[in-house]
Image (cartoon, rainbow, N blue to C red):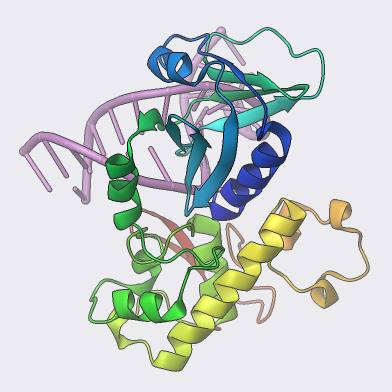
Length: 262
DNA sequence: TCTTTATGGTGAG
DNA sequence: TCACCCTAAAGAT
């Protein structure tokens, strides 16, 4: 169940584990047989992350993977279990086995197909080529609530339901305000907040948005998920103690503090 | 052993 | 806005 930080982390891990290796690729489930046949025996060159999309590049072909809500990877250093009936793709090489389960997309794309995917995406705050100016441009003049705009991958690539709620809280922005009504300094603050939250997510391998000072001296592993966040799925605000509101915005449940965000 | 839920996205109406 | 796709784990019974 990944937002962009998980995707970028996977790209790094998989590139480190598999690049420059000749891979054995199979599709135990059968549904990705065409992709598996194309990749089997090829040497992986690199793995790129763009928003929530992954591109596995080999000399002759590029594999596009989108995990969707349910997709996940599992890695095994040694003695991998037999594939499950749902294992879509299994990569083996460099002493590692990596299984892909339940992805929304898992297909070979040609350069045109990759461009099509990338052209639909807004700037990715985790990428060096992600620019705040582009975020500002894509947000301007939109009338949808900012809470909905942050989930729109053509506005901003990689943010999901937790980061949008947490970033709006930290920047004290009311999620119901029209996206185009935000002042430049608000939009810029939103970008910086999202980028730093997501970078931390890549580093830690999990989403912790509250500041260490607020969490006391507890170690990272002892921070329970319920305490790591400001508003997502919370009942009351950790700052003002007021009730947290929730509503479907942009098709998903958004949580915010009406007292702190206005 | 059910039912529900989840950090996502698309295409039809 | 809704139905639907994909899977696994947690929660309810």
